[in-house]
Image (cartoon, rainbow, N blue to C red):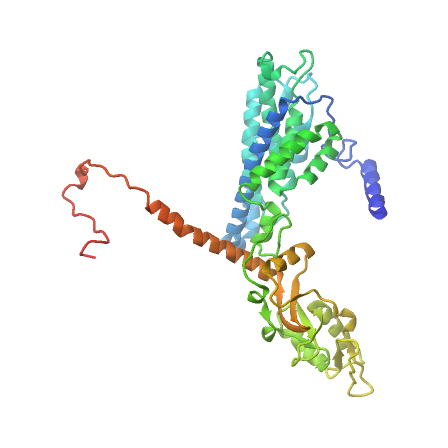
Length: 482
């Protein structure tokens, strides 16, 4: 904890001295608001959360679809050319809009800025407020499309700042609309809490709420987004509107799927990932998913030589090996990863004290004698996990999935009275979850089709159209011709 505090302090002092953002602040778009918010604005903040929740969900869907299409199409063979084409297209499209031409950090900073009442042009002016609102909305749509295309290219392209820019544009446009409503209809009961001599609506706050809502719907983060926005504004009074909008945005996005942008990339690449926010309900026992011991590659505590270990590392595709007392008893001793075994074997081959005939030892208490006095035993014992996580034979599969989800382990060894029966990896659980989801979808399809087929068909007594008269009747499944 003290190390983290010291590093954070050193980083803050360095940023303050170097001033990399050229604004004298620690973050590129740090702003401070002098005005507070009223209770009637909560409805507008909720509306921003609803809109940004839908937009963020659509952006994730489009981005992941384009990534998947890029992986299975010929575009993956022209990565550099795709980058050039997308860069040129982005430059041409962005040149047409002043909000797209601007640097994203500068744009977000300007959208967050509070109007002082002295500006006559730009975002704070009244002359072309409708045009600015339309430009911000068009910019939001184009940025969603450009961000979806850019993510997944052969260049670093993130989602964090573009999502903030999109949400800030939507929120600022919405705030300008509410500001216009208040200026033109200040006598409405909705604006009864506003003081006549003080500006009531701050569009920059709406931009801040929109950026937080867009981040929440894209990444499915809540507390982290609220803390980030609080650090940006340094105003505790705006935490409640941000929390409300973030909660609404994430709830709307979760209604269409629990996975955010980063979880979607993990699933797209096939990584074994089990979300902490989702409970998995499977059917069966661990015996149905495990790889049997007869199909596994194991290492015995004694009897192995450096040559046999080298051949095992070269031929085996597994990332680790259980260590057993003997292949006859299959008494489990521990587990060793392939990387550690390869490291020890490489050191032994370089050393002049070992040859291919040198014996290997994997367990404490094993009596291993070298074939000659000039050779030494290759000791793998310091790298063997003597207490691997094991489960009993016949354990419920839901308990197995919960163990993977809570402990974050990559494998579980199945034993019965100390004897190794098999192994289950996290990939087996992920594969079972996907298979069960597909089975549920297939099982739900026939009843749905049967329900549609049971609906009464529309019958009409109108004659056939003129162009169909004289044609032979269409054969049906009950026609004798079939």
